[in-house]
Amino acid sequence: MIKVVPQIDLRPETVPALDPPHLVLTGQLVNGKGADLLLDALALVKHDFRLDIVGRGEEEPMLRAHPMVSSGKVFFHGYTPEPERFLARAYAAVLPWRWQEPFGLVGPEALAAGVPLAGFATGGAGEYLIDGETGLAAPPRDVPALAAAIDRLLGDPALARRLGRNGRQLVAEKFSAAAALRSYQPLLETI
Image 1: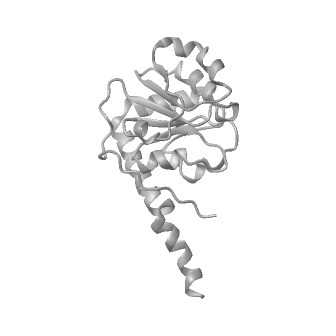
Image 2 (image 1 turned 135 degrees about the vertical axis):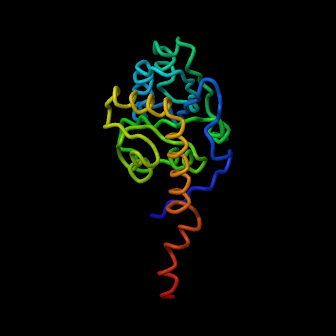
Image 3 (image 1 turned 60 degrees about the horizontal axis):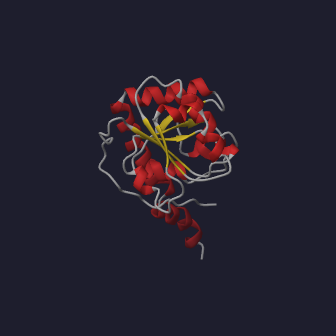
């Protein structure tokens, strides 16, 4: 199956200068998405940050009770049909998936906006979360490694910018409408 991600060009190729830098988690708040693992990891992060959680789900009450939420660094925004608003000001997007997400659009949408990724190397995320190229990947469920990846991004804006640029290029080359058309070209030539 060919995957197409709309080109999201919400910001210049610079990391927003928000103080503190915003991390974003978008998607359903269910066990497989690992938001609780992210909150555990954030408790280990040394750099300052703000986490915007965009989504709803059955795990929300448990997540709201997590000790990290009382730090004043975690904000719940509920569901929005326009998660792009949060990507436009994000420093990095996090993918703390516990389950083998087959592909998921969250990562490519963030990359299309020039936002680098930090997450677990699991499932289909390997198609776009390329460690050291488009983001920083941690072994599945390794909370300290995820914290270290987030800390590294927060502490190195030049790295975050480079990963974001690389991610934008990857989406254009591999997941854009033009890339989809190129992949169909050989088939069309046989008709």
